[in-house]
Length: 412
Image (cartoon, rainbow, N blue to C red; front, side, top):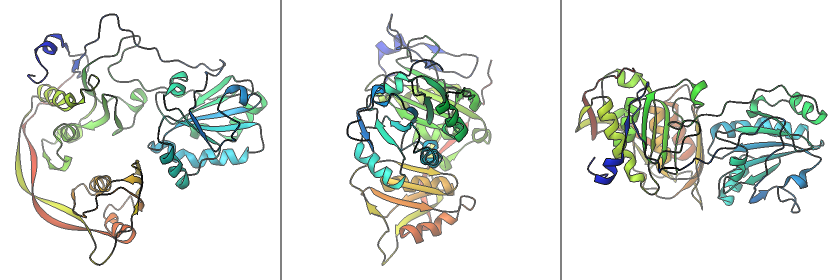
């Protein structure tokens, strides 16, 4: 690991645990992790720290004093969270049903772009107030580690339930308003990889383990994120990990069959401002752990080329600000301020074949694309009819990552 430097080489510690676990863990002596608040049922609700409120009367600023005498349904969400978006309709239905009752619906996001969220609300209206927790203080105060998450607070400011939004029913809110007990089991908070209870956070870490059940990890297969020096992904194949580490599309990785079927969870943590270490660290770990021998070569490859249709203008709305997109496997992609690379990525995932963007479109766009999720090829006609774009099949010389040999590791 010459690129890390001799000083860091002397500091690193390699750990192999009872699972396949490669960990480089460096923590300053005496450093303590800031303990996450654990909100308990029956305790006073922690303070709100809302920097901005949408859809609220001007005299309200998001404090419990202002809300005294009202029950509150507090929803922690984000525009990029698919489960959050899917729950909007259910929560809106509840908000409408109880609009004349003393209960306030408040949706809290830790996103910072107010204009982008406002644009999102034009497509997905949310009943009630929308608050911005730009410094994540409210998320920390309530101990929120995953979303969507709903907290029910009674008229006296006491926490009465913590649940997933889909578990909240009209009977639940009736019980909240009448002061009756609420029989809802609090959802388990997902545990971040590589962080034991009460331990200091690692400065540098690579962890690869056999995929934990969803009930343990709190994340569905394929879920992941990349933020603040941490990269995590759950329930993916070795081919998927190789695709991330070597920046080669997964369909251009030629590997033994088990590399597609065995599933793993991955966590890579790098020091602040050193995210360039992420992929070299991951490469070295997987090459050592799986005893990989591999090489790259160009092969004749069947691809799709995304193009504009001759004589037609694309059906895309130019956006003023960059945002995110939400897609689901049932065949629905909504994009807000999204570049063409996002579209090609989704089409590539649907068709399991390389998609090359040759549209010449370099801006960011809003659009909505729907296709039959059970018929992957239906996305071809959907692109033509709904976005004015076409896919052309071609043969191209593309670079493949070839795994010459690999050993499927066994846990201790």
